[in-house]
Length: 281
Image (cartoon, rainbow, N blue to C red):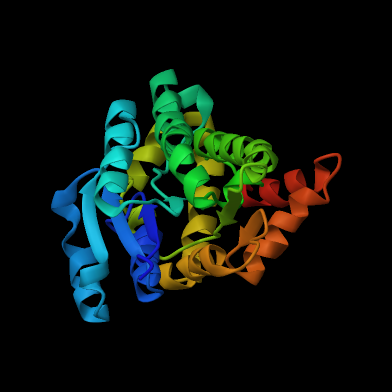
């Protein structure tokens, strides 16, 4: 009998990653659900039990910023399961602020998790994915196509991810590996809540940027009131793992498609500046 296909997903303690792990397990995949702190696996394990897929999900510790740990984890997965058929890069962290008031360490930390972590895990997975003719699916964001106010470091990292993956895709295809990016819009998950933002303190410290930040926060809170569920955002990830040839760029909603289309058709950048400028006034 052919053994089930194996997928490794990063950042599965909550949100899209958790939903993707449940979705892939339901679809019959052996799912390696990784997270930096396995002490936070309770929600995933309960969801797996409720869905009847606990036997298909294995939790492993993986810190995407630890290159040696990344390689060791990938090697361990292949040793235990004999194969790796897909990688879902989902781990990430938001970072809110504008550059004059952010430290370079803040920016580097955002790049380390959101960009270099993706590079490290992809690099370690590629030899195994070449062997299986597998897939790399990377959860980016509409912020990887449209730069957004007070998200300079986060969007820079997501832009870097999309440039990296768009460049890698034709090369990986020559050795039988498909590469795609998934671009969610607002998702009702713990991703934003995990920032632990003290909004009054942020506004008090924003100085000349306080009016713009206040307008941005109000607009953002409103947008998350109409957000997709994590399961809705994760469904296209599962689809991308099972269709014959997934597209390179996948949005998770019609809103996300329309939003990303703004930048893809914006040759001189004026349409995006007009749109996002309205968020801070």
